[in-house]
Image (cartoon, rainbow, N blue to C red; front, side):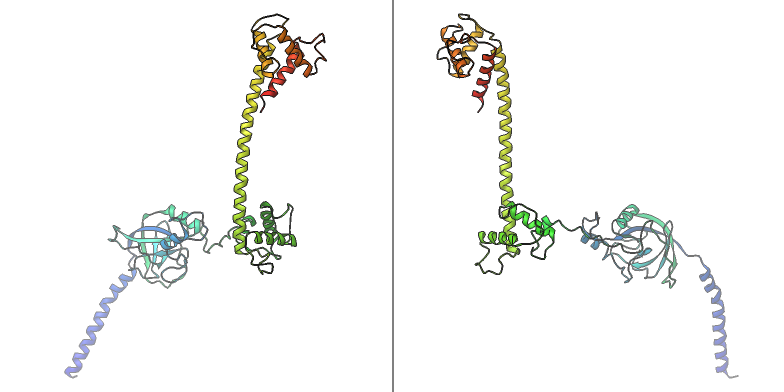
Length: 386
């Protein structure tokens, strides 16, 4: 054997021995348990339009906070078990988190940092919690927690390894709720109305035209000639037509809608002002009625205290009667408190006007009795009513 052959044989033997000595170490590494770690685990979700509430106040703001909400940074659509991890975790890394289950790294995030950055003592992991209001509520409920876990495999090819399931979360994106259509009374200001329009829109237009005085009252289910004629009259009055042959005659377009809305708002303001004035007058009238009622009670009490004075009787009660006769225009003299001839004559003239006696020769003329007192109370009340 040549020296060269001996050297080649020695090199081969050395290589075989080196490979044999490496096998136990490789086996030991393969049999080693996964390393336990500690993570700071937060949560995120995929916002949807028309949620009841948003973390940042709007759909757009929550989209910016949570990415586009439909796919992770790896390009995969969001799913239960998706994790966002720092960049040194490759996509496909499987991580087991105690109390949550096993998830796969398929996303990143500007705030998802490794230990030592932004004050974090452990790597931060973000867990996807779901869609819409449900996903947001679960993300808020989770908050931020320190969780023990371990790396299950690096760039795992294993499928269906994800065991993270947040209670109540659906794996499918929920169907968006269509907003309820606006009532015709609101759409009438933004949509055209014509022969092919719905019954609700035709009714709404006819009601507006009626409210500003261009159409008689009545239910209309179809765009008829009467509605079109009313619309043409409105357009003419508001300078919206160039002439009788204008192609826009009877067409409820943007300019006509704007003018009709302005006219309707003006009418509503006018009606509101009238209603306020009527309310004020009603209040004033009520006050006046109360005042008159109170005054009537006072008059009634005063006149009832007069009794039935006899001729030449004196006293304060007679003065009250004389003041009443002066107020009604039957006594043209200063009250004296004496039931004399002038007072008796005034009472008689009042009785004749009220058809209580036929003449001054009547036996009851000048006698202030119960019936005369009642008539005088009514006369005084009527005199004080505005």
